[in-house]
Amino acid sequence: MKLAIKLRKKSLTSWKNNEMVNHEISSLFEGLEHQTIAINLLQASLRNNKIAPAYLFSGPKGVGQNTSAIRFLEGLININIKKESTRFRLEKLNHPDLLWVEPTYIIEGKLIKKSTAKAQGFKSRVPSQIRLEQIREVTRFLSRKPVESKIGMIVLEDVESMNESASNALLKTLEEPMNGILILTSSRKDRLLNTIKSRCQEIPFKGLNSNLMKKEFSNNELEDDLRKHEEVLLNLSNGSPELLKNNMNLLQDIPREIINKIEERPSNSLEALSISKDIVEALNLEEQLWLIDFLQQEFWNKDHCLLTANRFEELRKHLLASVQPRISWEIALIELVKFN
Image 1 (cartoon, rainbow, N blue to C red):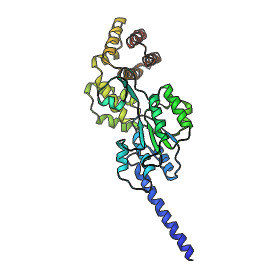
Image 2 (image 1 turned 30 degrees about the vertical axis):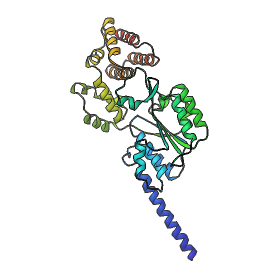
Image 3 (image 1 turned 90 degrees about the horizontal axis):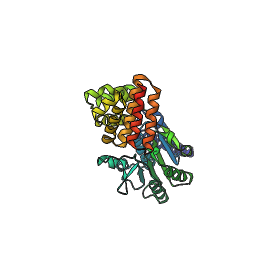
Image 4 (image 1 turned 60 degrees about the horizontal axis):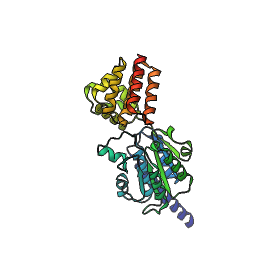
């Protein structure tokens, strides 16, 4: 009888501990309830203590992937251990066992993070990338003994921006046993090697619904004459408030005369050459690529012309392949004259 009581007490204690852990895990993801599928999968991993060596957080950029990564890693560190400073240190990227990797530019021979370059107002004519040197740093980081946690923690942001050598190096890292966890975030998982995707547990994130996005649009500042582009901006943003804000800022940064001239389409070759000159002189590569996305959506809404959409897609490929930008725009816009 005494034995039964002891067992009952032990069972009750275990139940209480489980309830406490479940409550702590649920509270980790407060504010992210709109990502039901993603959060349920992450909570299940923590509750069952079944942690994959690599995760792929897929979906539109800026809908909670980075925050969810921080909270998930916090859960790995803090289960049954209350450490109030953990989230703050992770958010500030100031934890000794966390390496956060983001696309970089090469400026004067040095790698500069995309966020740093943006804060400093740097504009490049080549897109940012995750490079081989950064993946080698990931490998070195995983090979060392963690300082405070049981494992090393890596987050690779916008992983679709990896160049070929970086992709191959990451694949090799994923194939080898490691004392760590990798979280890859991507808004374009179709650009990743299938062999990389197959080695990750995918956690899907979804965009906000149209009503919430329209509310976000109303809450953001935009000059009155540009509000007519609401539908285009919402479509480009793919359910992401972060992308919506970025798209609105980019639209306001592009000289109004360029937007107006190209929206009306050049009526002859000379006008096409003039607009091309204005675009290349006023906009960096990132802005030119965004303008292509904007124009594709704008013209598709107007006339649903597949030839126009395909021509802009070809222009994008030329710019990304480092074909001379002005020539690329001239040829594309002259061909648009023919489509009129």
